Image (cartoon, rainbow, N blue to C red):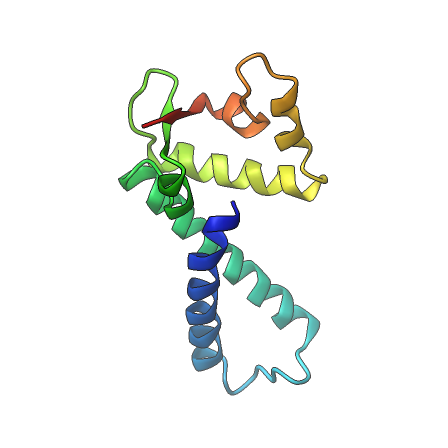
Length: 127
């Protein structure tokens, strides 16, 4: 996950720049309104989701996963489809929101799969 932070930072900078271009008349970065700040956060989560879903469906791996020679596949070793990748991303976010409980679950799972992989029927494999 640490390796994927670097491409995400670049995407978030571009995403925030697009946000400012679109909402430059009503968004004041020095004094943002709470609703617009929340919408910006949701937009940046959507940008991150686009990165993960596109990476998992096209290549089976993000940049960080490729560095560690990992690939995401379905239980039958087939490619992950966009719906499954999106659900996996949303469940991983939920898992992080509850102090990483879904990731800690992997320590006790017999197949070492985190909760979102167990629910989506996906798994990580080594290349």
